[in-house]
Image 1 (cartoon, one colour):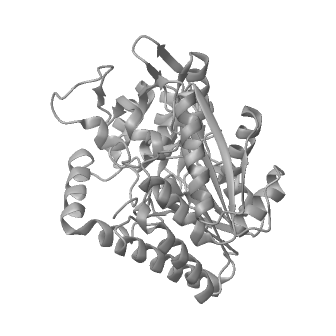
Image 2 (cartoon, one colour):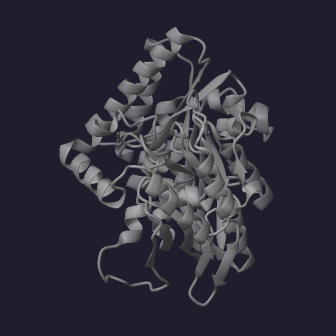
Length: 460
């Protein structure tokens, strides 16, 4: 749906004519994100370069009641940055400056278009550490990470994006600029508004600056791969490690289908004849690392692991971690359509949930590769399909419903890190309940009374 010429003219006057896209050939690139089988052409795309740009664009959109969808790199997996019909897509990719690294206060201030890897590299260059590491960290932007409250491989020990956001600059729906949070370690003055915007999926405001917490870099680490002849045994190993009060840096799981795809893709020497694999990493003081590594190996062996491979150096450790990060890309090579989901359960229920996903695949005659952050209970059942096969897509929808209902029944959640967006909004009321849904709707209406910010996402 094309936008009126005067709207396009207003946007060009704010951001420059070269930064506004209107042709269908250009717009199609911004009609989808990383979510399979969901797309919609926007009315136009505007590349913003400053908080002032965003503020002026939003003031104009608010006055004209035009929907606005914010976009970074478009790597989301819940349809969160898929355009609404006739909307303005505000792309923050050009807001890519690192504004300040304050080593004295262990903080880093960045614009939203900075990639997660650039944040991590800036911290390392200063001898510091930024732990959140989503699988798409090479290209995902920090603005998207904050909006989706992204997790990653190190979430078990170090937490998720929310745990590292100290302050935000946010443009509200009417163009007003809100600054919340600061460099203080302790600050309990008023509501914690920054936490309201973390994970809000672009429905409450547009993030234009992020103040991040950094931590000291761990002195040592050890990376291991344990292989199993049964998925249950791998899942039970994870539960036993946590029950032993060991909190590894990384505790990742790949099933047989995923292992084969990853090895074919990454060529790092993974065994392809096992049923399950655990990537285990511990970091910290060298003595603690050695002790925890020995304990995890012993627990894996008690659960019948076939073998344990210990990375001989940082290069091999990084190769193994990179191989795990490539799981989605590796699986995506196997079929025309790859649907990556995430469901999270309490860690004590991991073995049961893995068995359930496997049973769902058999009953619905579906090909599923399962991997995930098993240390924090976050599983990624990945459906290998073809969206042109309507009968199979219908079976996949039914499989989704069963998986999410089982996760909720086991005390889990419908999404551990991908967000609700378009893909899961029909499941949110069942999980959240009436009171939470009412409060979320009222908050959204208070901050965006005309409903122009990322309309249709999370809930209608």
